[in-house]
Image (cartoon, rainbow, N blue to C red; front, side, top):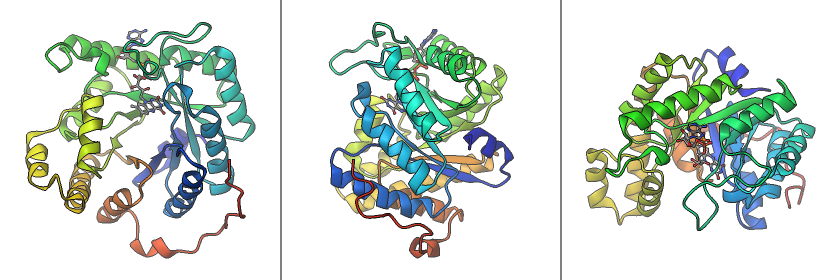
Length: 320
Ligand code: FAD
């Protein structure tokens, strides 16, 4: 099913989980076990990332197909333009279409490793907008198309002072509107830790005429170093009270996790109070924090954790 249709028809609060392709075969097996457990909570959809520069292309395609057809969740596959000439893009889209997957997250992607500027590959696309246009032109309405939105503007728009200029922020919004006008029907945001920035972004999107659902991307803090790495890479604002809360516990992994659950719960409560009805979790392939937040919000019942699943994985079927 197309995700945005399901979201628009849904009156209650729903949630979704993002996973990434693990590096080893055992890791892949472990991921499917985790997905099965998490799918038992009835997420609206699950998505699988496209490794930087296309590094996991075949594995991502394979995992996406199994998510849709064996784990039986509505699946969205990420697809980026980095190192992807048109034939490879169409191969990926044809493959998921043949597996019944109807949802794509269309992205430009980051520059290839070792480069700091995105360069269009020969015969490929320069930006997510071109990819969205291509998907609509070639595949009509078959795919639901999601695009990325940046509450703090894309890092390319960030000026020398470390924050986006107002002009950069508005250019980014206008460009996001073009992605939607070209056929995207859902936006998932980059991670953020200042909920007011997300809420302002939603408001600003509505002001420029973006009407599709805007889904907040929530990344529970699991680990202090990982948090610093991610917020540094994505140039995410860390509010002073969060930095202050983490400082005394930064070497205590359990305390950081608990704080991450507390913070994630508070952020989600505020977001839901503003009428947003979908929460998207960047799980980093970890289940505990996302599930604990959902449980704190009363959106899942802990009892279901041990619920027996309707479908059992045949031995080795997930080996790739
Ligand atoms: P675009 O939408 O093309 O925009 C990039 C920047 O360029 C923006 O600032 C935009 O305003 C500007 N820009 C581009 N074209 C134009 C134009 N014609 N006119 C004006 N401005 C323009 N990366 C991966 O490698 N794999 C993944 O699976 C992945 N998943 C992601 C999921 C989400 C929800 C998000 C938010 C990001 C994800 N990323 C992923 C990271 C993403 O690839 C990077 O953020 C990348 O640098 C930008 O991709 P984009 O699709 O947002 O680019």
